[in-house]
Length: 368
Ligand SMILES: CC(C)(COP(=O)(O)OP(=O)(O)OC[C@H]1O[C@@H](n2cnc3c(N)ncnc32)[C@H](O)[C@@H]1OP(=O)(O)O)[C@@H](O)C(=O)NCCC(=O)NCCS
Image 1 (cartoon, protein in one colour):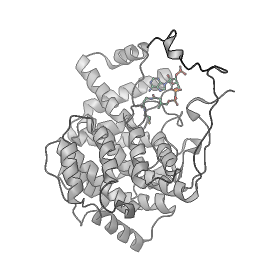
Image 2 (image 1 turned 30 degrees about the horizontal axis):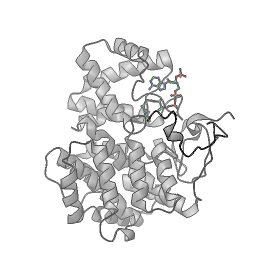
Image 3 (image 1 turned 180 degrees about the horizontal axis):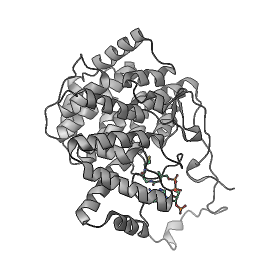
């Protein structure tokens, strides 16, 4: 059998939530370029209901989400305990997501409360890691502004508010990517929301998926630290058989539509924060890889610089991605629970056949 490795090109189910067909990212019928300026809450509503909210609905939805951002004391106690550990923040988030599913009354938690709690947990992990006090949500701010405020301790100005909102919108969903598919597999077994989200966080952690944003910045730092010409660095990296992080995509072979928008945001933010040298380095690498390998930057490439400009350490980048993507994961978990069937594919067995079992086999010729 000629099987597509990594399920490349295989359509495993139908969805009404989002699409990447034809190299365009579309949320419920709206191209991402149309939505880049929409508020994050509007996009969460769109992904969950496959329609945009009316004005009154949006105000009520936003109020509900923000009001649910306060964590129970029990969860804060657990977070203060686990987030100080030296483990990677994504490992802390994996444990924290699972812990959220074990506190009192969680069987009654619905997606708005779960999303709000996840954002607060992620902001709290960041604050605890930075030895900063936790911040309560401000009920006058929207969801994305509150998340940024609870991360940084500063209420965002108009420029930052718009920029971060767009970052969240662009990361909110991406049809059957690895973490979303993992969440859907778990949802297909009729498991609870927190189990599905824990699986999604595990999949996002890997450097070929969400973990790439941290690796992009590690690479930029390495280039700067090495004092090598960036092109020489990339040539050496490729010659050693290593990938250049933040480039390439399973679906977008002619460019990731999110990266184009994020590049513009990174340029503006880098100028404002004195990080132009990183931006210029990124453009040099991107030009070279396009010309020589036909590789385009993906969503993680310029986002890494944006997070750096926001003052975040690189090991925190992927938990921010998780915060943005939780809305999409929840949309897919709901759809899978509503319309899906147990996901249980088959495999082609290629191991030995017809072997006979001898009861004392381990005594004769065993290498153990
Ligand atoms: C995202 C990714 C896993 C997609 O993988 P994929 O769909 O299996 O694509 P392939 O690995 O088959 O790539 C096709 C070719 O491009 C090359 N390629 C893809 N991404 C590359 C990269 N970042 N650096 C160098 N070469 C790359 C592959 O080596 C392969 O070359 P070959 O045909 O000579 O063997 C891959 O591009 C990658 O590892 N990128 C870096 C990690 C990253 O940024 N991840 C975030 C994704 S949003």
